[in-house]
Length: 626
Image (cartoon, rainbow, N blue to C red; front, side, top):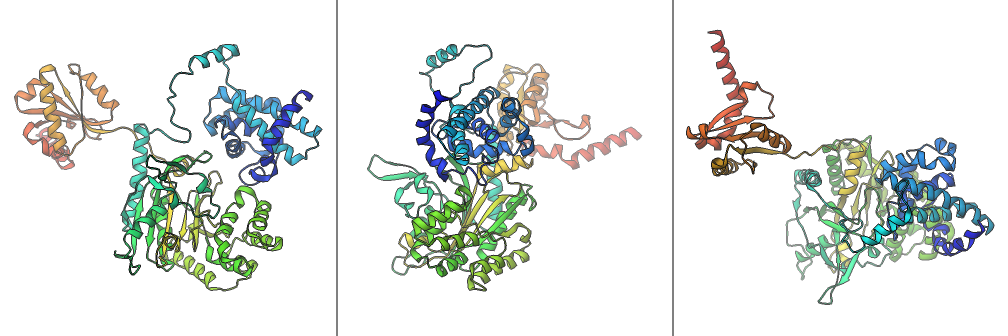
Protein backbone atom coordinates (compact mmCIF):
# COMPACT_ATOMS: atom_id res chain seq x y z
CA UNK A 1 0.00 0.00 0.00
CA UNK A 2 2.81 2.41 0.96
CA UNK A 3 4.48 1.77 -2.38
CA UNK A 4 1.41 3.13 -4.17
CA UNK A 5 1.08 6.36 -2.16
CA UNK A 6 3.37 8.38 -4.45
CA UNK A 7 1.53 7.04 -7.47
CA UNK A 8 -1.77 8.01 -5.87
CA UNK A 9 -0.57 11.53 -5.07
CA UNK A 10 0.21 12.16 -8.72
CA UNK A 11 -3.25 10.96 -9.71
CA UNK A 12 -5.01 12.90 -6.98
CA UNK A 13 -4.22 16.08 -8.89
CA UNK A 14 -5.94 14.72 -11.99
CA UNK A 15 -8.76 13.21 -9.98
CA UNK A 16 -9.45 16.37 -7.96
CA UNK A 17 -11.95 17.93 -10.43
CA UNK A 18 -13.99 14.73 -10.46
CA UNK A 19 -13.77 14.34 -6.70
CA UNK A 20 -14.96 17.92 -6.18
CA UNK A 21 -18.31 17.22 -7.79
CA UNK A 22 -17.83 17.95 -11.49
CA UNK A 23 -18.52 14.35 -12.42
CA UNK A 24 -21.94 12.68 -12.15
CA UNK A 25 -20.67 10.30 -9.50
CA UNK A 26 -23.63 10.36 -7.12
CA UNK A 27 -26.67 11.42 -9.19
CA UNK A 28 -28.88 9.83 -11.80
CA UNK A 29 -26.14 8.91 -14.28
CA UNK A 30 -23.91 7.00 -11.88
CA UNK A 31 -24.46 4.64 -8.96
CA UNK A 32 -20.86 4.75 -7.77
CA UNK A 33 -21.82 6.06 -4.34
CA UNK A 34 -24.06 3.08 -3.52
CA UNK A 35 -21.28 0.67 -2.82
CA UNK A 36 -17.75 1.61 -3.81
CA UNK A 37 -16.14 -1.77 -4.46
CA UNK A 38 -18.93 -3.03 -6.74
CA UNK A 39 -19.71 0.18 -8.60
CA UNK A 40 -16.06 1.15 -9.00
CA UNK A 41 -15.27 -2.22 -10.55
CA UNK A 42 -18.16 -1.69 -12.96
CA UNK A 43 -16.80 1.74 -13.91
CA UNK A 44 -13.43 0.13 -14.61
CA UNK A 45 -15.01 -2.64 -16.65
CA UNK A 46 -16.98 -0.14 -18.70
CA UNK A 47 -13.95 2.07 -19.22
CA UNK A 48 -12.26 -0.42 -21.55
CA UNK A 49 -14.74 0.68 -24.21
CA UNK A 50 -13.21 4.17 -24.09
CA UNK A 51 -9.92 5.64 -25.27
CA UNK A 52 -7.18 7.17 -23.19
CA UNK A 53 -8.57 10.67 -23.68
CA UNK A 54 -12.13 10.02 -22.58
CA UNK A 55 -11.97 6.78 -20.59
CA UNK A 56 -12.89 8.29 -17.23
CA UNK A 57 -16.13 10.11 -18.15
CA UNK A 58 -17.10 7.29 -20.47
CA UNK A 59 -16.47 4.71 -17.79
CA UNK A 60 -18.72 6.56 -15.37
CA UNK A 61 -21.38 7.07 -18.05
CA UNK A 62 -21.45 3.39 -18.99
CA UNK A 63 -21.20 1.99 -15.47
CA UNK A 64 -24.93 2.39 -14.70
CA UNK A 65 -25.83 0.37 -17.82
CA UNK A 66 -23.97 -2.58 -16.32
CA UNK A 67 -25.02 -1.81 -12.75
CA UNK A 68 -28.73 -1.93 -13.64
CA UNK A 69 -28.29 -5.50 -14.82
CA UNK A 70 -27.12 -6.48 -11.35
CA UNK A 71 -29.45 -5.70 -8.46
CA UNK A 72 -28.08 -3.93 -5.38
CA UNK A 73 -28.66 -6.99 -3.21
CA UNK A 74 -26.73 -9.15 -5.67
CA UNK A 75 -23.93 -6.59 -5.82
CA UNK A 76 -23.62 -6.42 -2.04
CA UNK A 77 -23.26 -10.20 -1.89
CA UNK A 78 -20.24 -10.23 -4.21
CA UNK A 79 -16.73 -10.39 -2.87
CA UNK A 80 -13.93 -8.65 -4.83
CA UNK A 81 -12.73 -11.99 -6.09
CA UNK A 82 -16.13 -12.72 -7.65
CA UNK A 83 -16.28 -9.53 -9.72
CA UNK A 84 -14.70 -10.91 -12.87
CA UNK A 85 -16.73 -14.10 -13.08
CA UNK A 86 -20.06 -12.40 -12.34
CA UNK A 87 -19.66 -9.01 -14.02
CA UNK A 88 -17.95 -10.03 -17.25
CA UNK A 89 -21.00 -11.59 -19.01
CA UNK A 90 -23.22 -8.71 -17.87
CA UNK A 91 -20.76 -6.05 -18.95
CA UNK A 92 -19.98 -7.80 -22.22
CA UNK A 93 -23.60 -7.71 -23.33
CA UNK A 94 -24.07 -4.13 -22.09
CA UNK A 95 -21.06 -2.35 -23.56
CA UNK A 96 -20.03 -4.71 -26.37
CA UNK A 97 -16.46 -5.39 -25.23
CA UNK A 98 -14.74 -8.74 -25.64
CA UNK A 99 -14.64 -11.12 -22.70
CA UNK A 100 -10.83 -11.14 -22.73
CA UNK A 101 -10.70 -7.37 -22.23
CA UNK A 102 -13.40 -7.43 -19.59
CA UNK A 103 -11.84 -10.21 -17.58
CA UNK A 104 -8.48 -8.49 -17.21
CA UNK A 105 -10.11 -5.08 -16.82
CA UNK A 106 -12.42 -6.26 -14.06
CA UNK A 107 -9.53 -7.76 -12.16
CA UNK A 108 -7.46 -4.60 -12.61
CA UNK A 109 -10.38 -2.47 -11.45
CA UNK A 110 -10.76 -4.46 -8.23
CA UNK A 111 -7.06 -4.16 -7.44
CA UNK A 112 -6.98 -0.44 -8.27
CA UNK A 113 -10.05 0.30 -6.18
CA UNK A 114 -8.62 -1.59 -3.19
CA UNK A 115 -5.32 0.31 -3.43
CA UNK A 116 -7.12 3.62 -3.77
CA UNK A 117 -9.36 2.98 -0.78
CA UNK A 118 -6.48 2.01 1.51
CA UNK A 119 -4.11 4.74 0.30
CA UNK A 120 -6.82 7.39 0.48
CA UNK A 121 -7.49 6.54 4.12
CA UNK A 122 -3.84 7.19 4.92
CA UNK A 123 -4.13 10.63 3.31
CA UNK A 124 -7.24 11.46 5.33
CA UNK A 125 -9.65 11.73 2.39
CA UNK A 126 -13.40 11.46 3.09
CA UNK A 127 -15.42 8.41 2.04
CA UNK A 128 -17.36 10.05 -0.82
CA UNK A 129 -14.22 11.57 -2.36
CA UNK A 130 -12.44 8.26 -1.80
CA UNK A 131 -15.09 6.44 -3.82
CA UNK A 132 -14.78 8.91 -6.68
CA UNK A 133 -10.96 8.87 -6.71
CA UNK A 134 -10.97 5.08 -6.56
CA UNK A 135 -13.28 5.07 -9.56
CA UNK A 136 -10.90 7.28 -11.53
CA UNK A 137 -7.98 5.00 -10.72
CA UNK A 138 -10.04 1.91 -11.54
CA UNK A 139 -10.97 3.37 -14.92
CA UNK A 140 -7.35 4.22 -15.65
CA UNK A 141 -6.12 0.79 -14.65
CA UNK A 142 -8.87 -0.99 -16.59
CA UNK A 143 -8.46 1.05 -19.74
CA UNK A 144 -4.69 0.55 -19.85
CA UNK A 145 -4.83 -3.17 -19.04
CA UNK A 146 -4.18 -5.07 -22.27
CA UNK A 147 -5.93 -8.44 -22.73
CA UNK A 148 -3.50 -11.36 -22.57
CA UNK A 149 -4.22 -14.80 -23.98
CA UNK A 150 -4.22 -17.56 -21.37
CA UNK A 151 -0.76 -19.02 -20.92
CA UNK A 152 0.86 -16.45 -23.26
CA UNK A 153 3.67 -14.25 -21.90
CA UNK A 154 3.19 -10.50 -21.88
CA UNK A 155 6.44 -9.88 -23.78
CA UNK A 156 5.14 -11.67 -26.86
CA UNK A 157 2.10 -9.40 -26.97
CA UNK A 158 4.31 -6.33 -26.67
CA UNK A 159 6.46 -7.57 -29.52
CA UNK A 160 3.43 -8.10 -31.71
CA UNK A 161 2.23 -4.58 -30.92
CA UNK A 162 5.55 -3.07 -32.01
CA UNK A 163 5.49 -5.13 -35.16
CA UNK A 164 2.08 -3.72 -36.12
CA UNK A 165 2.78 -0.08 -35.27
CA UNK A 166 3.36 0.84 -38.92
CA UNK A 167 0.03 -0.60 -40.07
CA UNK A 168 -2.97 1.58 -40.85
CA UNK A 169 -5.88 1.17 -38.44
CA UNK A 170 -8.99 -0.11 -40.15
CA UNK A 171 -11.30 1.31 -37.48
CA UNK A 172 -13.20 4.54 -38.20
CA UNK A 173 -12.26 7.61 -36.09
CA UNK A 174 -13.42 7.49 -32.48
CA UNK A 175 -17.14 8.13 -32.12
CA UNK A 176 -17.92 7.62 -35.82
CA UNK A 177 -19.44 4.72 -37.72
CA UNK A 178 -19.06 2.66 -40.86
CA UNK A 179 -22.31 1.72 -42.57
CA UNK A 180 -22.10 -1.70 -44.17
CA UNK A 181 -24.96 -2.69 -46.51
CA UNK A 182 -27.06 -4.16 -43.67
CA UNK A 183 -26.62 -0.99 -41.58
CA UNK A 184 -27.47 1.12 -44.64
CA UNK A 185 -30.73 -0.80 -45.13
CA UNK A 186 -31.55 -0.12 -41.50
CA UNK A 187 -30.71 3.57 -41.89
CA UNK A 188 -32.78 3.95 -45.06
CA UNK A 189 -35.75 2.32 -43.31
CA UNK A 190 -35.43 4.76 -40.41
CA UNK A 191 -35.03 7.77 -42.70
CA UNK A 192 -38.08 6.65 -44.70
CA UNK A 193 -40.08 6.65 -41.45
CA UNK A 194 -38.87 10.18 -40.71
CA UNK A 195 -39.84 11.33 -44.20
CA UNK A 196 -43.24 9.61 -44.15
CA UNK A 197 -44.22 11.37 -40.92
CA UNK A 198 -42.88 14.76 -42.03
CA UNK A 199 -44.63 14.67 -45.42
CA UNK A 200 -47.89 13.53 -43.79
CA UNK A 201 -47.78 16.85 -41.87
CA UNK A 202 -47.03 18.73 -45.13
CA UNK A 203 -43.41 19.57 -44.28
CA UNK A 204 -40.92 20.18 -47.10
CA UNK A 205 -37.39 18.75 -47.07
CA UNK A 206 -34.33 21.02 -47.20
CA UNK A 207 -30.59 20.70 -46.64
CA UNK A 208 -27.49 22.87 -46.09
CA UNK A 209 -23.68 22.43 -46.24
CA UNK A 210 -22.14 20.26 -43.54
CA UNK A 211 -19.46 22.98 -43.25
CA UNK A 212 -20.61 26.20 -41.57
CA UNK A 213 -19.00 29.37 -40.23
CA UNK A 214 -18.00 29.19 -36.56
CA UNK A 215 -19.64 32.56 -35.80
CA UNK A 216 -23.02 30.98 -36.42
CA UNK A 217 -22.71 29.02 -33.16
CA UNK A 218 -20.96 31.52 -30.88
CA UNK A 219 -23.82 32.74 -28.71
CA UNK A 220 -21.78 33.23 -25.51
CA UNK A 221 -24.23 31.73 -23.01
CA UNK A 222 -22.05 28.94 -21.65
CA UNK A 223 -23.44 26.27 -23.96
CA UNK A 224 -21.54 22.99 -24.21
CA UNK A 225 -21.96 23.00 -27.97
CA UNK A 226 -19.37 25.78 -28.42
CA UNK A 227 -16.77 23.54 -26.77
CA UNK A 228 -17.72 20.47 -28.82
CA UNK A 229 -17.30 21.78 -32.36
CA UNK A 230 -15.02 20.21 -34.95
CA UNK A 231 -13.75 23.66 -35.94
CA UNK A 232 -10.66 24.75 -37.86
CA UNK A 233 -9.30 27.49 -40.12
CA UNK A 234 -9.59 26.59 -43.81
CA UNK A 235 -7.06 27.36 -46.53
CA UNK A 236 -8.65 30.76 -47.14
CA UNK A 237 -8.26 31.71 -43.49
CA UNK A 238 -11.98 31.36 -42.68
CA UNK A 239 -13.03 29.97 -39.30
CA UNK A 240 -15.32 27.05 -40.11
CA UNK A 241 -16.77 24.00 -38.37
CA UNK A 242 -18.57 20.78 -39.15
CA UNK A 243 -22.12 21.66 -38.13
CA UNK A 244 -22.91 20.56 -34.57
CA UNK A 245 -26.65 21.17 -35.10
CA UNK A 246 -28.97 22.27 -37.91
CA UNK A 247 -31.12 25.03 -36.38
CA UNK A 248 -28.63 27.90 -36.99
CA UNK A 249 -28.33 26.78 -40.63
CA UNK A 250 -32.12 26.91 -40.89
CA UNK A 251 -32.10 30.43 -39.42
CA UNK A 252 -29.44 31.52 -41.92
CA UNK A 253 -31.49 30.18 -44.83
CA UNK A 254 -34.72 31.76 -43.61
CA UNK A 255 -32.94 35.12 -43.34
CA UNK A 256 -32.01 34.81 -47.01
CA UNK A 257 -35.76 34.93 -47.74
CA UNK A 258 -36.22 38.10 -45.69
CA UNK A 259 -36.66 41.47 -47.38
CA UNK A 260 -33.96 43.73 -45.98
CA UNK A 261 -36.03 46.91 -46.18
CA UNK A 262 -39.09 45.60 -44.29
CA UNK A 263 -37.97 42.45 -42.46
CA UNK A 264 -40.84 40.50 -44.03
CA UNK A 265 -40.24 36.95 -45.28
CA UNK A 266 -40.74 36.60 -49.05
CA UNK A 267 -42.42 33.21 -48.80
CA UNK A 268 -45.77 31.77 -47.83
CA UNK A 269 -45.96 31.40 -44.06
CA UNK A 270 -45.79 29.29 -42.10
CA UNK A 271 -42.63 27.66 -43.41
CA UNK A 272 -42.79 23.95 -42.56
CA UNK A 273 -39.39 22.43 -43.22
CA UNK A 274 -37.68 19.18 -42.27
CA UNK A 275 -34.19 17.76 -42.77
CA UNK A 276 -32.04 14.75 -41.84
CA UNK A 277 -28.54 16.24 -41.61
CA UNK A 278 -25.36 14.66 -40.32
CA UNK A 279 -24.12 16.57 -37.25
CA UNK A 280 -20.75 16.51 -35.50
CA UNK A 281 -19.90 17.09 -31.83
CA UNK A 282 -16.69 16.18 -30.05
CA UNK A 283 -18.15 14.76 -26.86
CA UNK A 284 -17.95 11.67 -24.70
CA UNK A 285 -19.39 8.71 -26.59
CA UNK A 286 -21.80 6.34 -24.92
CA UNK A 287 -24.75 4.18 -25.79
CA UNK A 288 -27.04 6.14 -28.12
CA UNK A 289 -24.57 9.04 -28.48
CA UNK A 290 -21.77 9.31 -31.03
CA UNK A 291 -19.53 12.13 -32.19
CA UNK A 292 -21.35 12.06 -35.50
CA UNK A 293 -25.02 11.33 -35.92
CA UNK A 294 -27.91 11.99 -38.24
CA UNK A 295 -30.68 14.12 -36.79
CA UNK A 296 -34.25 14.41 -38.00
CA UNK A 297 -35.39 18.03 -37.63
CA UNK A 298 -38.90 19.44 -38.11
CA UNK A 299 -39.32 23.22 -37.77
CA UNK A 300 -42.19 25.67 -38.20
CA UNK A 301 -41.48 29.35 -38.89
CA UNK A 302 -44.09 32.09 -38.58
CA UNK A 303 -46.62 30.63 -36.08
CA UNK A 304 -46.98 32.50 -32.79
CA UNK A 305 -49.60 30.37 -31.08
CA UNK A 306 -49.22 27.18 -29.08
CA UNK A 307 -50.84 25.25 -31.95
CA UNK A 308 -47.39 24.88 -33.53
CA UNK A 309 -46.05 23.08 -30.46
CA UNK A 310 -49.08 20.78 -30.39
CA UNK A 311 -48.57 19.94 -34.07
CA UNK A 312 -44.90 19.06 -33.59
CA UNK A 313 -45.55 17.02 -30.46
CA UNK A 314 -48.15 15.12 -32.45
CA UNK A 315 -45.56 14.44 -35.18
CA UNK A 316 -43.17 13.00 -32.59
CA UNK A 317 -45.93 10.72 -31.30
CA UNK A 318 -46.85 9.70 -34.86
CA UNK A 319 -43.26 8.62 -35.47
CA UNK A 320 -43.09 6.57 -32.27
CA UNK A 321 -46.34 4.84 -33.15
CA UNK A 322 -45.11 4.11 -36.69
CA UNK A 323 -42.14 2.14 -35.34
CA UNK A 324 -44.07 0.22 -32.66
CA UNK A 325 -43.32 2.36 -29.56
CA UNK A 326 -46.19 3.11 -27.16
CA UNK A 327 -46.83 5.70 -24.45
CA UNK A 328 -46.14 2.98 -21.86
CA UNK A 329 -42.52 2.90 -23.02
CA UNK A 330 -41.75 6.51 -23.95
CA UNK A 331 -43.04 9.83 -22.67
CA UNK A 332 -42.64 13.52 -23.51
CA UNK A 333 -41.62 15.85 -20.69
CA UNK A 334 -42.92 19.36 -21.30
CA UNK A 335 -42.06 22.69 -19.67
CA UNK A 336 -42.03 26.37 -20.61
CA UNK A 337 -39.14 28.78 -20.40
CA UNK A 338 -41.74 31.52 -20.29
CA UNK A 339 -42.98 30.17 -16.97
CA UNK A 340 -39.41 29.79 -15.76
CA UNK A 341 -38.73 33.33 -16.99
CA UNK A 342 -41.56 34.65 -14.81
CA UNK A 343 -40.04 32.84 -11.84
CA UNK A 344 -36.55 34.21 -12.52
CA UNK A 345 -37.86 37.72 -13.05
CA UNK A 346 -39.64 37.56 -9.70
CA UNK A 347 -36.40 36.29 -8.15
CA UNK A 348 -34.54 39.30 -9.50
CA UNK A 349 -32.55 37.60 -12.27
CA UNK A 350 -31.65 40.19 -14.97
CA UNK A 351 -33.12 39.50 -18.41
CA UNK A 352 -29.61 39.41 -19.89
CA UNK A 353 -28.79 36.46 -17.62
CA UNK A 354 -31.91 34.43 -18.49
CA UNK A 355 -30.34 32.23 -21.20
CA UNK A 356 -27.24 31.53 -19.13
CA UNK A 357 -29.40 30.62 -16.13
CA UNK A 358 -31.36 28.11 -18.24
CA UNK A 359 -28.15 26.50 -19.49
CA UNK A 360 -27.02 26.04 -15.85
CA UNK A 361 -30.38 24.61 -14.71
CA UNK A 362 -30.22 22.14 -17.61
CA UNK A 363 -27.19 20.56 -15.90
CA UNK A 364 -29.28 19.29 -12.95
CA UNK A 365 -29.16 15.65 -14.03
CA UNK A 366 -25.43 15.87 -14.74
CA UNK A 367 -23.96 17.70 -11.76
CA UNK A 368 -26.72 17.66 -9.13
CA UNK A 369 -28.79 20.26 -7.30
CA UNK A 370 -26.00 21.44 -5.00
CA UNK A 371 -23.61 22.15 -7.87
CA UNK A 372 -26.34 23.97 -9.85
CA UNK A 373 -27.13 26.19 -6.86
CA UNK A 374 -23.43 26.97 -6.57
CA UNK A 375 -23.15 27.96 -10.25
CA UNK A 376 -26.27 30.14 -10.01
CA UNK A 377 -24.65 31.95 -7.11
CA UNK A 378 -21.17 32.27 -8.60
CA UNK A 379 -21.91 32.79 -12.33
CA UNK A 380 -25.29 34.53 -12.32
CA UNK A 381 -24.85 36.35 -9.01
CA UNK A 382 -28.02 35.10 -7.31
CA UNK A 383 -28.37 35.00 -3.56
CA UNK A 384 -27.97 31.48 -2.17
CA UNK A 385 -31.59 31.39 -0.96
CA UNK A 386 -32.89 32.49 -4.38
CA UNK A 387 -30.82 29.79 -6.13
CA UNK A 388 -32.11 27.18 -3.70
CA UNK A 389 -35.73 28.25 -4.28
CA UNK A 390 -35.34 28.09 -8.08
CA UNK A 391 -33.83 24.60 -7.96
CA UNK A 392 -36.55 23.47 -5.55
CA UNK A 393 -39.24 24.75 -7.92
CA UNK A 394 -37.82 22.63 -10.76
CA UNK A 395 -38.64 19.47 -8.77
CA UNK A 396 -42.37 20.07 -9.29
CA UNK A 397 -44.13 17.33 -11.26
CA UNK A 398 -47.36 19.19 -12.06
CA UNK A 399 -48.00 22.63 -13.46
CA UNK A 400 -50.11 23.54 -10.43
CA UNK A 401 -47.36 22.52 -8.01
CA UNK A 402 -44.77 24.50 -9.97
CA UNK A 403 -46.93 27.63 -10.09
CA UNK A 404 -47.44 27.39 -6.33
CA UNK A 405 -43.77 26.78 -5.47
CA UNK A 406 -42.60 29.51 -7.81
CA UNK A 407 -45.28 31.93 -6.69
CA UNK A 408 -46.47 32.85 -10.22
CA UNK A 409 -50.11 31.80 -9.83
CA UNK A 410 -52.36 31.84 -12.90
CA UNK A 411 -50.02 33.97 -15.00
CA UNK A 412 -50.28 34.27 -18.78
CA UNK A 413 -47.39 31.83 -19.14
CA UNK A 414 -49.11 29.21 -16.96
CA UNK A 415 -52.37 29.58 -18.91
CA UNK A 416 -50.48 28.99 -22.18
CA UNK A 417 -49.14 25.71 -20.81
CA UNK A 418 -52.65 24.68 -19.75
CA UNK A 419 -53.84 25.37 -23.30
CA UNK A 420 -51.12 23.09 -24.71
CA UNK A 421 -52.26 20.18 -22.51
CA UNK A 422 -55.89 20.82 -23.55
CA UNK A 423 -54.89 20.69 -27.24
CA UNK A 424 -52.97 17.48 -26.60
CA UNK A 425 -56.11 15.98 -25.06
CA UNK A 426 -58.14 16.89 -28.15
CA UNK A 427 -55.36 15.66 -30.44
CA UNK A 428 -55.37 12.27 -28.71
CA UNK A 429 -51.77 12.44 -27.49
CA UNK A 430 -52.32 13.51 -23.86
CA UNK A 431 -51.17 10.12 -22.53
CA UNK A 432 -47.70 10.83 -23.97
CA UNK A 433 -47.24 14.21 -22.25
CA UNK A 434 -46.26 15.05 -18.69
CA UNK A 435 -45.22 18.32 -17.11
CA UNK A 436 -41.65 18.44 -15.78
CA UNK A 437 -40.28 21.74 -14.48
CA UNK A 438 -36.68 20.50 -14.64
CA UNK A 439 -36.69 20.34 -18.45
CA UNK A 440 -35.22 23.58 -19.82
CA UNK A 441 -32.95 22.30 -22.65
CA UNK A 442 -29.29 23.24 -22.84
CA UNK A 443 -29.34 25.62 -25.80
CA UNK A 444 -29.54 29.33 -25.09
CA UNK A 445 -31.92 30.27 -27.89
CA UNK A 446 -35.08 28.58 -26.54
CA UNK A 447 -37.73 31.09 -25.41
CA UNK A 448 -41.00 29.23 -24.76
CA UNK A 449 -42.28 25.67 -24.54
CA UNK A 450 -39.49 23.07 -24.39
CA UNK A 451 -39.84 19.29 -24.42
CA UNK A 452 -37.83 16.07 -24.29
CA UNK A 453 -38.64 12.47 -25.16
CA UNK A 454 -37.53 10.02 -22.49
CA UNK A 455 -37.33 6.28 -21.95
CA UNK A 456 -39.70 5.36 -19.11
CA UNK A 457 -37.53 2.35 -18.27
CA UNK A 458 -34.66 4.74 -17.54
CA UNK A 459 -32.13 2.85 -19.66
CA UNK A 460 -31.52 5.57 -22.26
CA UNK A 461 -31.05 9.31 -21.89
CA UNK A 462 -33.04 11.97 -23.81
CA UNK A 463 -34.42 10.46 -27.03
CA UNK A 464 -35.42 13.71 -28.71
CA UNK A 465 -35.94 17.34 -27.77
CA UNK A 466 -37.06 20.70 -29.00
CA UNK A 467 -39.02 23.83 -28.29
CA UNK A 468 -39.76 27.42 -29.27
CA UNK A 469 -36.95 29.79 -30.28
CA UNK A 470 -38.57 33.10 -31.27
CA UNK A 471 -35.43 35.24 -30.89
CA UNK A 472 -32.84 33.17 -32.75
CA UNK A 473 -33.22 35.03 -36.05
CA UNK A 474 -32.83 38.33 -34.21
CA UNK A 475 -29.39 37.18 -33.04
CA UNK A 476 -28.41 36.91 -36.70
CA UNK A 477 -29.66 40.34 -37.72
CA UNK A 478 -33.41 40.01 -38.29
CA UNK A 479 -35.23 43.36 -37.96
CA UNK A 480 -38.26 41.56 -36.56
CA UNK A 481 -38.74 38.80 -34.03
CA UNK A 482 -39.73 35.73 -36.05
CA UNK A 483 -41.64 32.98 -34.19
CA UNK A 484 -40.05 29.55 -34.67
CA UNK A 485 -40.49 26.14 -33.08
CA UNK A 486 -38.89 22.79 -33.86
CA UNK A 487 -37.35 19.56 -32.62
CA UNK A 488 -34.35 17.30 -33.23
CA UNK A 489 -34.31 13.51 -33.20
CA UNK A 490 -30.99 11.60 -33.33
CA UNK A 491 -30.67 8.34 -35.24
CA UNK A 492 -28.31 6.62 -32.75
CA UNK A 493 -30.56 6.79 -29.72
CA UNK A 494 -33.75 5.76 -31.54
CA UNK A 495 -32.03 2.65 -32.91
CA UNK A 496 -30.88 1.76 -29.39
CA UNK A 497 -34.44 2.32 -28.15
CA UNK A 498 -35.91 0.03 -30.80
CA UNK A 499 -33.35 -2.64 -29.94
CA UNK A 500 -34.09 -2.26 -26.22
CA UNK A 501 -37.84 -2.65 -26.82
CA UNK A 502 -37.26 -5.49 -29.30
CA UNK A 503 -39.25 -3.82 -32.10
CA UNK A 504 -36.42 -3.22 -34.59
CA UNK A 505 -37.17 -5.21 -37.76
CA UNK A 506 -34.63 -7.29 -39.61
CA UNK A 507 -33.35 -5.96 -42.93
CA UNK A 508 -32.28 -8.89 -45.12
CA UNK A 509 -30.90 -8.31 -48.60
CA UNK A 510 -33.57 -8.75 -51.30
CA UNK A 511 -33.78 -8.54 -55.08
CA UNK A 512 -36.72 -9.11 -57.42
CA UNK A 513 -34.98 -11.40 -59.92
CA UNK A 514 -31.85 -13.43 -60.44
CA UNK A 515 -31.20 -14.18 -64.10
CA UNK A 516 -29.12 -17.31 -64.77
CA UNK A 517 -27.65 -18.38 -68.13
CA UNK A 518 -27.47 -22.08 -68.97
CA UNK A 519 -24.11 -21.81 -70.79
CA UNK A 520 -21.59 -19.31 -72.16
CA UNK A 521 -23.58 -18.80 -75.38
CA UNK A 522 -26.63 -17.75 -73.37
CA UNK A 523 -24.84 -15.10 -71.21
CA UNK A 524 -25.59 -12.29 -73.66
CA UNK A 525 -29.22 -13.42 -73.86
CA UNK A 526 -29.40 -13.43 -70.03
CA UNK A 527 -28.20 -9.82 -69.98
CA UNK A 528 -30.90 -8.90 -72.49
CA UNK A 529 -33.54 -10.49 -70.22
CA UNK A 530 -32.11 -8.57 -67.25
CA UNK A 531 -32.37 -5.30 -69.19
CA UNK A 532 -36.02 -5.97 -70.14
CA UNK A 533 -36.89 -6.77 -66.50
CA UNK A 534 -35.15 -3.62 -65.26
CA UNK A 535 -37.07 -1.57 -67.81
CA UNK A 536 -40.20 -3.08 -66.25
CA UNK A 537 -39.11 -1.57 -62.91
CA UNK A 538 -37.60 -4.69 -61.36
CA UNK A 539 -34.33 -5.07 -59.49
CA UNK A 540 -32.22 -7.74 -61.18
CA UNK A 541 -29.01 -9.59 -60.33
CA UNK A 542 -27.31 -11.45 -63.18
CA UNK A 543 -25.55 -14.62 -62.05
CA UNK A 544 -21.98 -13.92 -63.23
CA UNK A 545 -21.28 -17.59 -64.02
CA UNK A 546 -23.10 -20.10 -66.15
CA UNK A 547 -25.55 -22.36 -64.31
CA UNK A 548 -25.67 -25.71 -66.00
CA UNK A 549 -26.43 -27.11 -62.58
CA UNK A 550 -29.74 -25.63 -61.52
CA UNK A 551 -28.88 -26.19 -57.85
CA UNK A 552 -26.09 -23.64 -58.13
CA UNK A 553 -28.45 -20.97 -59.45
CA UNK A 554 -31.04 -21.70 -56.74
CA UNK A 555 -28.39 -21.51 -54.03
CA UNK A 556 -27.21 -18.10 -55.27
CA UNK A 557 -30.79 -16.80 -55.57
CA UNK A 558 -31.55 -17.84 -52.01
CA UNK A 559 -28.37 -16.20 -50.72
CA UNK A 560 -29.18 -12.81 -52.28
CA UNK A 561 -32.87 -12.98 -51.28
CA UNK A 562 -34.36 -13.21 -54.78
CA UNK A 563 -38.14 -13.34 -55.16
CA UNK A 564 -37.96 -15.10 -58.55
CA UNK A 565 -35.34 -16.67 -60.77
CA UNK A 566 -35.24 -16.53 -64.58
CA UNK A 567 -33.49 -19.36 -66.44
CA UNK A 568 -32.22 -18.48 -69.91
CA UNK A 569 -31.73 -21.81 -71.69
CA UNK A 570 -31.51 -22.77 -75.41
CA UNK A 571 -34.75 -24.78 -75.70
CA UNK A 572 -37.02 -22.08 -74.22
CA UNK A 573 -35.12 -19.26 -75.97
CA UNK A 574 -35.55 -20.87 -79.40
CA UNK A 575 -39.30 -20.81 -78.73
CA UNK A 576 -39.21 -17.14 -77.68
CA UNK A 577 -39.66 -17.95 -73.99
CA UNK A 578 -37.92 -17.47 -70.64
CA UNK A 579 -38.60 -19.90 -67.80
CA UNK A 580 -39.30 -18.06 -64.56
CA UNK A 581 -39.86 -19.59 -61.16
CA UNK A 582 -41.35 -17.95 -58.07
CA UNK A 583 -39.26 -18.69 -55.00
CA UNK A 584 -41.24 -17.05 -52.21
CA UNK A 585 -44.99 -17.02 -52.87
CA UNK A 586 -47.26 -19.45 -51.04
CA UNK A 587 -48.88 -21.04 -54.08
CA UNK A 588 -49.08 -24.57 -55.44
CA UNK A 589 -45.73 -25.91 -56.63
CA UNK A 590 -46.92 -26.60 -60.20
CA UNK A 591 -48.07 -22.96 -60.53
CA UNK A 592 -44.81 -21.38 -59.38
CA UNK A 593 -43.09 -21.93 -62.73
CA UNK A 594 -44.14 -20.06 -65.87
CA UNK A 595 -42.74 -19.84 -69.41
CA UNK A 596 -43.05 -16.15 -70.28
CA UNK A 597 -42.72 -14.73 -73.82
CA UNK A 598 -39.57 -12.61 -74.16
CA UNK A 599 -41.59 -9.83 -75.78
CA UNK A 600 -43.98 -9.71 -72.80
CA UNK A 601 -41.47 -9.46 -69.95
CA UNK A 602 -42.70 -5.90 -69.35
CA UNK A 603 -45.92 -7.50 -68.08
CA UNK A 604 -44.21 -10.18 -66.03
CA UNK A 605 -46.35 -9.68 -62.90
CA UNK A 606 -49.46 -10.62 -64.81
CA UNK A 607 -48.21 -14.19 -65.09
CA UNK A 608 -47.91 -14.49 -61.32
CA UNK A 609 -50.90 -12.38 -60.28
CA UNK A 610 -53.61 -13.82 -58.05
CA UNK A 611 -56.11 -13.71 -60.92
CA UNK A 612 -53.81 -15.62 -63.24
CA UNK A 613 -53.06 -18.23 -60.60
CA UNK A 614 -56.76 -18.60 -59.76
CA UNK A 615 -57.58 -19.05 -63.45
CA UNK A 616 -54.90 -21.73 -63.79
CA UNK A 617 -56.14 -23.51 -60.67
CA UNK A 618 -59.71 -23.44 -61.96
CA UNK A 619 -58.61 -24.85 -65.34
CA UNK A 620 -56.70 -27.59 -63.55
CA UNK A 621 -59.79 -28.41 -61.51
CA UNK A 622 -62.03 -28.65 -64.59
CA UNK A 623 -59.54 -30.92 -66.31
CA UNK A 624 -59.45 -33.19 -63.27
CA UNK A 625 -63.27 -33.54 -63.10
CA UNK A 626 -63.63 -34.23 -66.83
